[in-house]
Image (cartoon, rainbow, N blue to C red; front, side, top):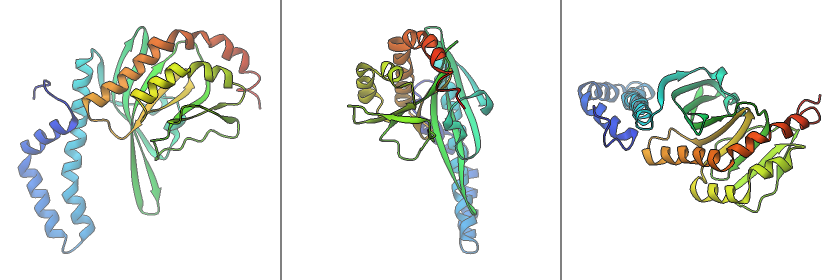
Length: 261
């Protein structure tokens, strides 16, 4: 299958479903037959091939996106290699479809994160698409810029964090107490205006030496994935050098605020 004119995961998914139409049709017929006996299993069998081929298609889409942007692609990642309270959510957390590269000497990764919410016999999956920016020396306190459009995620800030008032009504900003000034220096009015205009659906978490920009769901549209990538590039271009220089400021504050018992 050619990588040209691939605009979304759905383009590839439709191709895979067409290519495997006999398998899909067989599953649908079996599922319909079971609907009269065990409805829940019948529905599951009908849905399963569509879900399977979409997940396969999304992996291919991320691989094509990596090639188009001179980045590398890996099917899975090790959860322990990633930092952030987002990755502590739920159960059965998994990293997949890791696209890695660099922008202006800053390592970046785009990947999918999934976890499960369990209640009794029910399992509900949650999916996110994340762009990670790595900094060489900086150790960040907890900082979270949460999009008000993102309703399905809540990250515990703990009792050590404080909400920082913003004029911008599209986000909520919080940080570890004692780091409010540095946090507002990072999220300048100019950067907040850019995010509100170009990326209002994304939230941003600072953890250890990482900045994680994330949106809900598996982003399977080329244009939307480019928006995520451009957001990361903009933060690097506009604020990367300044954020790196905060290393000394943070290092001086950590013994009083971050590391206190």
